[in-house]
Length: 210
Image (cartoon, rainbow, N blue to C red; front, side, top):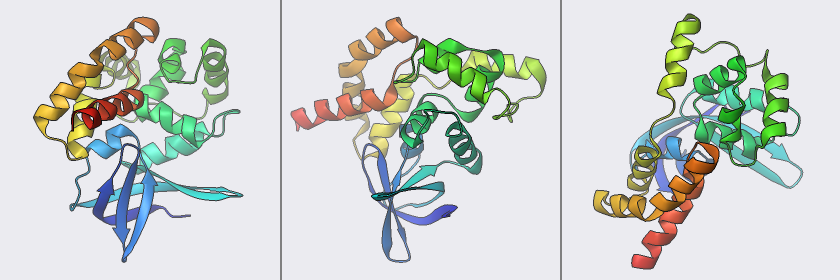
């Protein structure tokens, strides 16, 4: 297995980072949160998980080893493939997922695109003893604080992802404003803003204005 890749960032796309490793460009599938921390031309180190299929080899990249481990553990649940596991990590941090599972928080899992009520209930049962306790907190009080804080606001995540893709702060701000109605509708319906979908919508807006 390829445990990590390290080298300069050669290119960034909405869901892929290309890392130059020994003169070879490695295409790595990443969440918007991971992509937002990368800059073209700067060195990066991503923990990775290689998913092998009959007709493809896909490398998934993560900010750290803990995120990769959770990605792989999520796939031990029936019906969870690499894309859904990555979508879960695109919405929630590893600790937020641990808290959701340990507290039976269906709504947190339903905030992930592709997971309905029955699916969330099934995942809570299957993952109950697999993810472990939150790493960034100690005891129930720490878990409650982490749950209360939740993920970063969607506006910050989206803006950082756009800037990471090379857009100016002004352009990122305008794109965030353009997709705000979409985000507000999603928040009203599911309680969470789907950053990957918002990123695609924002990029379409920016492409139309160029």
